[in-house]
Length: 282
Image: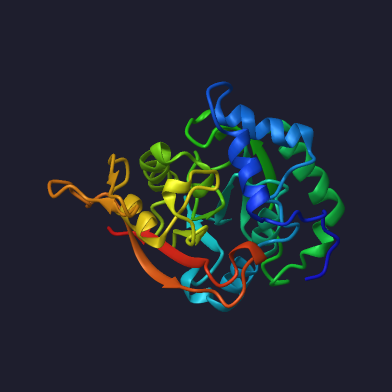
């Protein structure tokens, strides 16, 4: 896959400090601050210009995780599986998923990000060749909305249920106080079809939670704790590990079925990122 891409800013300490400063203190909401960065347009350090190579490799090499077909039966008819990318930015991953045959939806809180994603798709759709001529490409749609409410459902098919949800730099962008809600919402949006999966590229695993964010530190054990016990308020110990109350029932959580360190990822997470795959436990 070869394509022109926006200039990528180095994700160094100076960049992390500038991003952290933008979100510090009282003032506008988190969503408003993310939208402001898109409106200003000169500081988008999370934008790497291409899909994450770890996702590219997962979709190409681990088809066993995706189910037998990108088509599913519903009401006596066949339809494409639906994929959701929360915090999709310019939508590189959305275009990749559509090229694999999914009806792919990118969700953003920034109207400017949606506009740029739509423009990028118009200009670069041919850079994402379909993986199967027999199946063809799915639709590409970018939706303005807040991950945690339902207003954006009017812009998607299927009553807000998806057979594939992809999370990269979204979990770590949220304040840790929203992690229980993120996990509960992810479970809610995941279709009950047996093929349905949540794919997380865990980043930044090298960063201590106490150093602040965004991006907030996101070790594998944090994903495990919150997705195993969605919606449960968890405390963290001094080392940043979640503390699971003994009385908590994890029956409603997702089950991690695969976990590996990818050979390739974006430079800012190369060698420290992990890929995790999650399914409903029942």
